[in-house]
Length: 109
Image 1 (tube, rainbow, N blue to C red):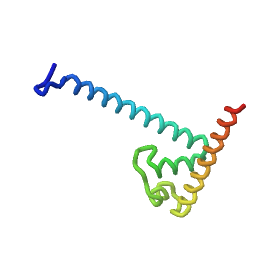
Image 2 (cartoon, rainbow, N blue to C red):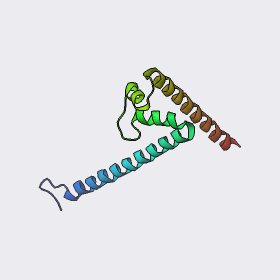
Image 3 (cartoon, one colour):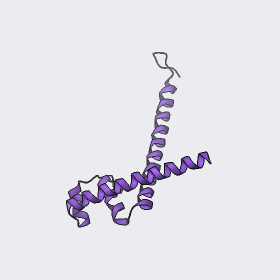
Image 4 (cartoon, helix red, strand yellow):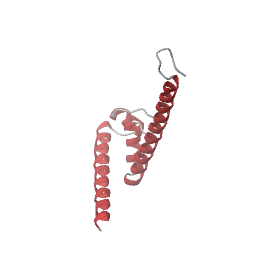
């Protein structure tokens, strides 16, 4: 059907369907990324370190927290929480670099 301006009104509906579909893909992609991040934490960090990362970056409930809030939740000092978070990020970075190197070595073998 055509509207008064001569434009096909079904194209608006098609656009809405496309936007809805893309939104579903975005949600699925974000969900997969979230699952990958949580799996990486579990694989490379101790349970206490992983808990800190989940709290700090809101990976469990979507609510990011300050170092002080994380410290309070975990029964640690703010300074210790900051030290632990820095250590976690170094471990995760090193794990990522090692994985990238391993993938590279597999491609040239």
